[in-house]
Image (cartoon, rainbow, N blue to C red; front, side, top):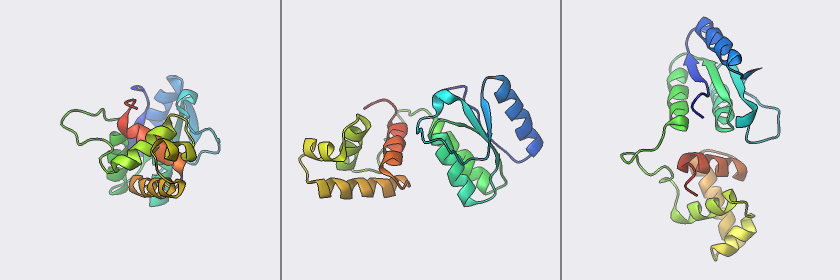
Amino acid sequence: MTDRPLHVCNNPNDAAGLLRTAVRGGWRAHAGFALPTPTWDLEKQRIVCHGPVADEHALGQALLAATRGCGIIATAHTPLAEALADDLHRLEAPASAADVAPASILTVEEEALLRHLADGSTIAAAAKAEFVALRTANRRIAAARKKLGVTTTREAVIAFTNRIGDQS
């Protein structure tokens, strides 16, 4: 997804110009970063969210929208601008041999469960495949959610797969 617009500007006029360019390139503009659509993967819908990022809540919404496949054109000032730009860069940066393993914050057991979930298994099926109790699997997945900074298992699976690419 190399043509996805991911921009953080400190000037609203610059952001407006980038938005016009994205729309001409086939992206659909969506004001704000909250997404009402229940579909998780929005990459094929070519939505570009735009607007100001004035607080941590808006920053979180922008990152979630980007994780779901949306383009982002945000207006923000430091330190929010720097934090958002760094996080967006990490979302799109290809892993290299010099990088730390993308999912290194997770234990091997947590990764194994998330791989099963990413492949479409239920938590119960993943627990059975890993020879652990359902309660243990739920605890490990909860720990993975916390480490990945997300609140739902679905978000954890998406964050995990984004971190590792298509290596699963």
